[in-house]
Each structure stands twice: as C-alpha cells, then as structure tokens.
Length: 234
Image (cartoon, rainbow, N blue to C red; front, side):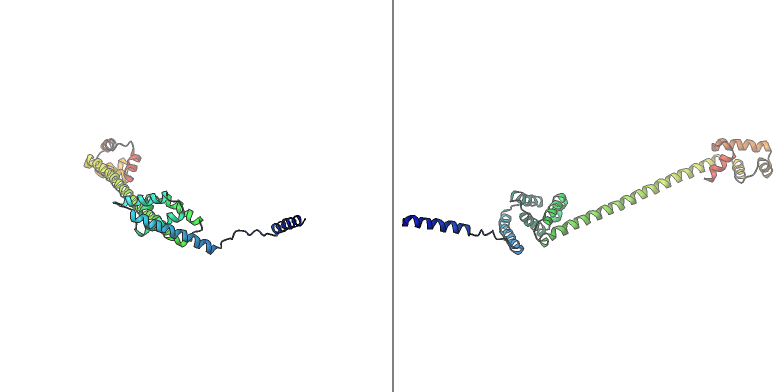
C-alpha cells in the first residue's frame, strides 16, 4: 500500500512540475550584437581572403581581376565576401577599371548592399567609385558631343561656302559671256529703264536694243525682264 501511495506521489509531482515549467524563448539579439556578430563573420572571411591573396599567382592585371571575380563567385556568395573583394580591388586601384568593364554588376551589387544591414560606411567607397565612373562617362559624352557639333559646324560652313562660291563663279561666268554692250543694256534693265530709254542712252536704234535683249535672255536663260531682275537680286 505504501508503495502505491509513493508512486502516486511521484506522478503528481511530475504532472505539477510540467504544468508550471516556463518555456524560455530564444534570446533576441540586439542591433549592436547583430552588428558585432556580422563583423566577426567578416573578420573570419577576411582572414580566408588574405590567405587566398597569398596564393594568387597573377601575371597580368586582367588575370588578377579574373581571379578576384572567381573568388567572389566560388565563395559563399555573401555580401561580406564580395565586399572584401571590392576593397582589395580598390586598394590595388583596379576597381574603377573593373567597374568600366562590369558596370551593371556593380550597380546591382550596390543596391544589394543598400538593402542589407551592412553599415553604409563599409561600401561608401563603391558608391563613390560608381559616381566617379558616371561623371567620367558624362564628361566623355559631353566632350564627344562638343567635338561632333564642331565637326558638323565646320562641314556645314564648308558646304555653305562651296555653294556660295559655285553660285558666284557661275554668275561671273554668265557675265563674262555677255558682250560689253549687252552688259550695259542689262544694267539699264536692272535699273528699271524701258527699251526706248536704253536706246536713247546708248545712241542705238530700238530694234538693236531688242536684239541685244533677246541675246541677253538667251545667254542668261531667262524669258523676260522680271526673271532677269529676280535672277540678279538674289
């Protein structure tokens, strides 16, 4: 009987103890603890990265860049690893060159870093280099645009001068084809004088004036006085 009572007592104690046991939730890390944990991880990866750098046997700059890129891709693909690779390129003064070769990749990476919990001071150098890349490209485009405008301006000026010279030469050639008498009659016509007035001015007959005018029209490829006047007023 005592054994039964003792067994009942033990069961009661266990049941009571289970009902009063408090479940302790996992400890929630503070932002500072998260930050410390994150940088402990970065420090650990930095040591691995330093070891990797000592093993690099790169002959050319392109080869070195390729090995750094490969390390980033073959690693855990964490932002911390990529950030370490970027810092290495920046220290070697190679980041700007790699940005020019893979600008879209670095734009996406910067967006990933901005959306992460990594302190922005850690990747500020990347943002600075990207802005510098944009400014350099903008200056190049502006310089190229200015040069193009200058070239087009020169071409247009040459074309205008050529057209003007050809027209002037054509006019000179036309005038040279006219006789002295025809030139005088042409000038009288341009001054608005009638055939009769021209005949009186040059002491020639009216028929002679008409003959000269016909020749002038033929040589200058015009049909009447109005066309002649318009031709030399342009």
